[in-house]
Length: 544
Image (cartoon, rainbow, N blue to C red; front, side):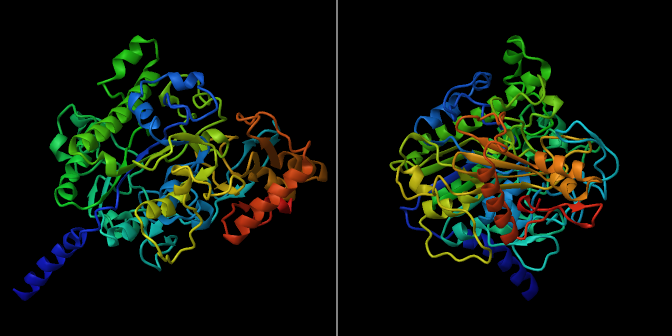
């Protein structure tokens, strides 16, 4: 009996910890994170103008939020999902966590397509056929983040959410997690400080968006990506985005009733593949002449917009809108490579170049809006910011001071920019992006093996495959040609589409940014793929 009593008591302890009241002046915080949603996938003007792609979809609620928010026109995430999500949780750059690709559902299983020597056939940008293997997989943290030390291939870190919970916030996770692999402590939302978890697992995509198909939870179709905790909607026409929104709003009843500030992390699975139509909205896009893939994607986008609108309406109805901060962001650029989306591949993010997986702008420049009632300066801020900034920014919003973390936090609070101040991060602060992987089992020349740094209006892109060839190609002529291709320089203020490589015109600026990128990667002990010919890591950009 004593053992049962203690077990029951321990089961109640997390709820008791989540029920602590915090000072009323602490604002509620909703982080609305969308998956694979591009910079031009809404009518919100993040750029200097509205582009044709901004006008494809119906997004009145995103527009509604933008009109009261600080809209960040130069906001960045990582090229793929997990690195962004773990950077938000830890405040660390992905190159620093060494979580540089998405985590597999199964622990100790690399997810990248990089084999032990794979890169054969057509080369990036040169047009020359290369014989032999060039690179092999880097030794990255394939198991994601961990709230406890000693777990192999993880980054040990204190979670953003735990600080919020300890400060009295009721913390809620709804939707996609994808921070770590199954079988590790980091996969469990409760281990990171969440009081409630709905549907957050190791899955990086949904098995199915349809309630009629139980979101993948059927005997015939179940796998690790089947979305959990939504049994109530099985066999109904409730789309996954709609179900998650309903559940998220249900969870808010408790903290609202008890006067407790809440942190709701509502991470939609949309608009990730599989690109399946949300039939509430798809037909009008078909009628407008879109092909089936385009109409399906457009319907997913509109479903996300409706979800946002329902959240905003709920806050108004409950009388708490004036004390609730809204953060709207995307985990990476829109997927321009996947043919499920219809249309012409690699064009969906224009004027930005490329898309998800790439360190060109289409893969890393993302939507970001922040609304802080009574404090936001409603304007478009063009200071470059990055996903790891969310960690200190949210703690700043919550009024949490003097925190100390076991990890070295790279992000800076952008709250001063949100409220129109001048003490935020410098526009000249270097922002680093690192993707030392092959994303798919086929070649994608403007996606695979890219590192980049942005400093002010200048951006350097490093093609790691060419850096490897610069030290391993057969002849000096081939090595010289690889050196010429390896570094690209763009002035983003004049060339947002990264069409005009200025490296040869500005060699000093190219060398300067190569040093900045290399020094940062060295300081973080960032992983690099291995050059098969030498058995050594690929050179950093200032080593070629």
